[in-house]
Length: 197
Image 1 (spheres, rainbow, N blue to C red):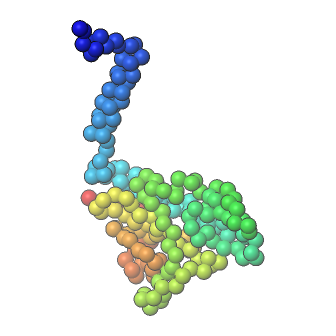
Image 2 (image 1 turned 90 degrees about the vertical axis):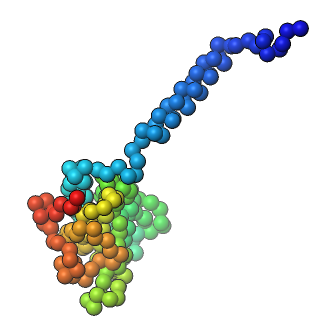
């Protein structure tokens, strides 16, 4: 009596399927072990390139806000600045329907070139203790914060269009007087500080 296992037939499609599955497993394992880890730190030249791109993106946001306020997007009788960065590429009409306006690229809404762009919702009062929610008919602010671990340059800007930078800066509310709070006003790339390594 012959054993049933010794009579097993191999089909061409079965062999191909087995090879493909095996190749997929090897490919997956290779990529798991060779992917860039979160601990990989960018070079100083990569960090500097990202800081320069962030400076240009902040200027782009300033220009977009100045264009945004020219139109009463929701037709409520008030022209306002965009409260959130997303509204600079897609805003809402009077019926809360999305309207593509594309004043900035959509990619600025996520981490781009090592920086995340965050809408600030309030500003510090003159007493530096309390905060006031922004009146979007008059004011707005954005922070560009680096995703790089360690020393990094943070940028902030508001409706004045003045851009400020600070080493390892992070804020929840726009400072009443950024320079008094330790922020450096920058008007061009030559004034943009380098992140210290």
